Image 1 (tube, one colour):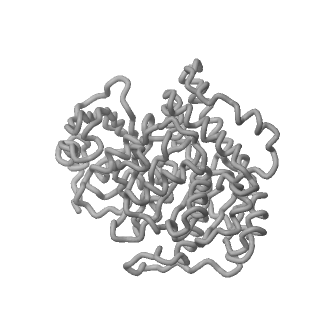
Image 2 (spheres, rainbow, N blue to C red; image 1 turned 30 degrees about the vertical axis):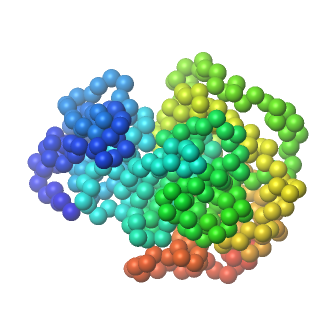
Length: 437
């Protein structure tokens, strides 16, 4: 790995000239045109331009870039030389993003390709169930696979804390589900049943069948559907505030069934600034303590949300997925609650006691119906535990994966994690919190 020692070598212009790759045609950037403005503290700005695989940089900023990165010279040079990944820097707060976080991760995945950096997330593409699917891959490809599924309205960047934590021990695959992020937007009814078909095809396409699945919100519901319909496809599940079929609150179901979801394709007349403000307010409402999450994460997530809502097809996918969750049948032959008792893979359910979207009261029903599952309620936590309580959430994930057959790292860890205590496996429990900034 390259080491930069001198003060001169930390100059952004020198680092960009020496270490910025010039040809990325073999990456997904080989067929894209993007611009990234680098705002380097105390050093000024640079623009990195990618034009169908050819990479150039110039001093100064261009108008209307695809994304803006604010960082310092040391972090920039660490990224260029493979001493840190974009995920590491973003989570540590030394790198802030405006605009397309997806683009920043994609470019970051091409930097210092020979450096051994497990948390580097490489952007890849495949076809699954006939859908062009974008995904991130990190970690050693020989390690056990873990698939991360994002929630409703989000994309794979919302799973970065989990990706960074598991990449040293696993092959981590983090797709954008159809209709979201960098994946295509087929004119589907975005129900859990339809999305599980895509997920099963994705596992086959990336040779991850039989791996563990970690899903947040909508992603948790899709992972659960796969485990119920094809238990051999999943070795274990971790479900973060999973969207569950409402047992009540179904008074509007008849109206929802006839709602014309294509209305979501109509243009949005809200000014971008107001849309961004509303997105930030909505994101803050997902947390029990909004101040526990760094401000730059809200900005990046709100920008991704705003970019997504500019596209009619993505608005339709969002509306259809929302209807699909609301109309998810609780009982009957296809009902979730009448089928969940047959859940086979070892499963960890994590709930936030202050979740305004998916009530933690579901934990009691899960415990009663699936007594073999692990159920934990996180105190003072909202709907996004991987960002609000990352230390506790990631500890519980690691402990659960240690109990899942075939999910352990093939090379022994230096500091093995203890397995989940028996009391976690047999009854619902409130997990200890451990906030990190």
